[in-house]
Image (cartoon, rainbow, N blue to C red; front, side):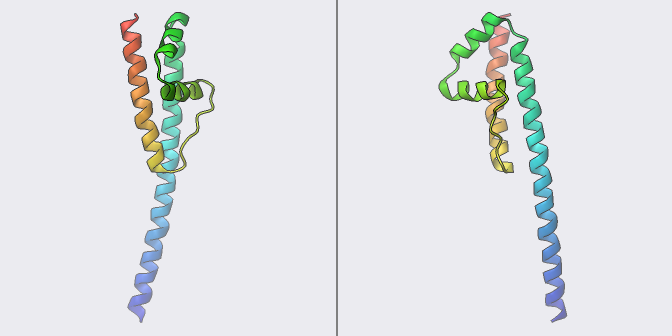
Length: 106
């Protein structure tokens, strides 16, 4: 009986610490994504007005909505690690397109 109680206590501690680690990881990734979005916005605003307009015109509807939400500070951040990681991946593609566009128009 004592061994069962020990295993239950160990299991409870494992769940508690895992949950806290996941929560902290989610907060960290959220902060990283927020900083990355600010970096994208700053990079965009350093471009000339004509280049900004041309870049926005070339975006497809999904990326345009995503990009405008970054510029308007209305980006809808995910609520868990997996959705935040997916958003980071999408933002990396968007930033690469922005960077490549900027390199071609220097």
